[in-house]
Image 1 (cartoon, one colour):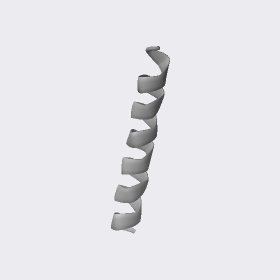
Image 2 (cartoon, helix red, strand yellow):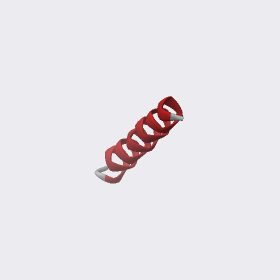
Image 3 (tube, helix red, strand yellow):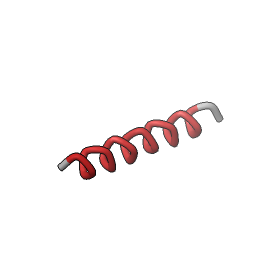
Image 4 (cartoon, one colour):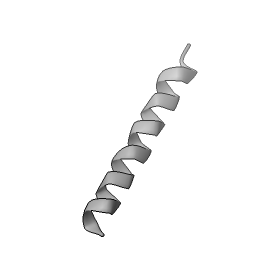
Length: 25
């Protein structure tokens, strides 16, 4: 039950990082 929220959190971090990189580029 604890694995799913952790996975979702990592997914959001990756999405946020991708958006920041696209914004910079």
